[in-house]
Image (cartoon, rainbow, N blue to C red; front, top):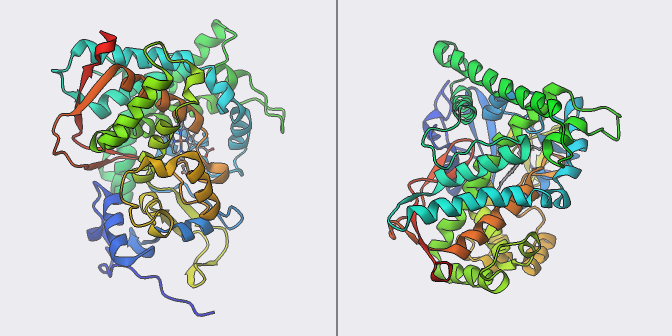
Length: 462
Ligand code: HEM
């Protein structure tokens, strides 16, 4: 068969395409270049070739775990300095600790167990409602910041039985400060490559932050061992669970790696999703009205129950549609297990880095039609969603792929449904600047930049 060369921007000798990719917002550069070069193209940075993948058809090939697998590259490789072979940063099943943790934790993250965490999630969500109610409608809400406080506090409570109490503090808890700095520096280190040797002070702080995260986690384990409970939380599951395959328990180091992992993998992704949900709802008043009407019909004025969360099809579709347009984990990195051919004509070498652009895959017009750029939750209602998933498999991948897909999905989903419903139940929201249009800030994840809103208590609540 005829092979075609993979297109791409020309680049400079030695430097490759550094000038084409904005280090502050690589995913935006890559998205823009995709408009020029199409659904598959390549670029070079630090002497290494990367192939960008941006259509459903190609993603569908990449989803075949016989041919392709996750690669721990760039920033994720740096995060591994702190979380080692924890679930998110493990190279794969060849690392025994990944398999043990995966098998011990999969059932615990299933929908039934996640239901046991409803009260804790409700506790933290209520604190957010209280804060916004007390501050009143004069207050300009820093949307992503407050949602990040929510997701951090929820994870800490559910995964570590620990309270950060973030809402009323400008200064974040030392654990959170260390984690935020550790993640930011991981990103910086990945961009700088060999130049890191010139950043000695930063490096020192980096390893100190990692030590603080691990020390705090170790203390949490010791506290629980000294005060055992019957709680069915993630901490007990990790400390007591036995892997059915090997009969082994997770080591203390593996528990620490995964405790930190849950906080890292779960807080920005979920907080970004909630921020995008409110951005899109405020930009689309008819969707907003439908979502709020659903809350009024199903939940009314009373306290929300876990059962009611499964009876919110429209809000469920809103979450899916927000993650379609703005997948908060914007890319997953894969590699071919052997030399192979993609799309029938593009040669891919074993081990070459394949960078998926989820936002582009999610807007593929062959799948989503002419209005693929629009926010239209109706297309994500169960029936249409399932029909599309059959016709175009792997056309919606915000939670990653196969064995290495997100273990926290039911956790994030329950939390996001609960918070969205609770907020719409209690408040009417308005955009601080009605002319605001979405801008993206990228770290490991993406979130709206400069998005502020106000919360007006609804009459039936006062
Ligand atoms: C993996 C997205 C919430 C824990 C992943 C991956 C994606 C993802 C795309 C695959 C990463 C890769 O291929 O490199 C999201 C999104 C979330 C979310 C969009 C929220 C909307 C959470 C939460 C937790 C969590 C709440 C923890 C409680 C993990 C872990 C992995 C993972 C441990 C690694 C799984 C493995 O490889 O075994 N997530 N995530 N995530 N996520 Fe999430």
